[in-house]
Image 1 (cartoon, rainbow, N blue to C red):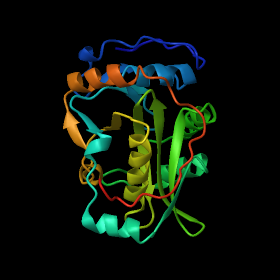
Image 2: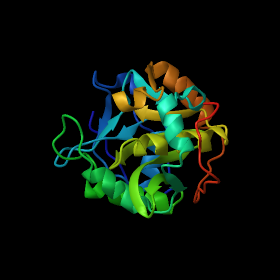
Image 3: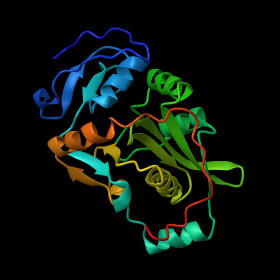
Length: 239
């Protein structure tokens, strides 16, 4: 399963092995690097890197896949109330590096430490500079209290990680992102693997086959690289 990976620039492409040959856990390939072209190639083919410090670089395509369809998001009554009270303000792409740093240090249930290494931070910060990785920030006053980041290609957003230092801050950030993506006719937010936190917002499991059917359709739309900006704040009304 080990595959040789060249360093690729953003306009270069690598064909990964067929995901149907993945291990039972969802590993498609191992080894290589996190160069821009490699990361973009992986996401376009429905794969993502995930590995712990000291381990080889693994490329994953799990079955089933955990996703959120923007038009299916569930916003609870209490969350709508929080949004209407303007408990948070929001921004996009204003402090990407700080968001990923906070995600690195966020405590995870049943995990000792983080899978976001310095190598991952450097790679995704580079993707942000190239306009493909984006962050959503939730604020209370001048304090960053929640956020998330991920990769955007076509009409797909591939979520990577989120953090919250104040109750509901990361949920509010995701709702903000979801509304932003809905307005741009995005078809899917890839959440990768199940979490209760995301399930409470309407994310659900679908088969790998269904995921790839959707991916092939949505990723072929033109990319929207560059800095994202938000106009207004969501209320959750109508969602």
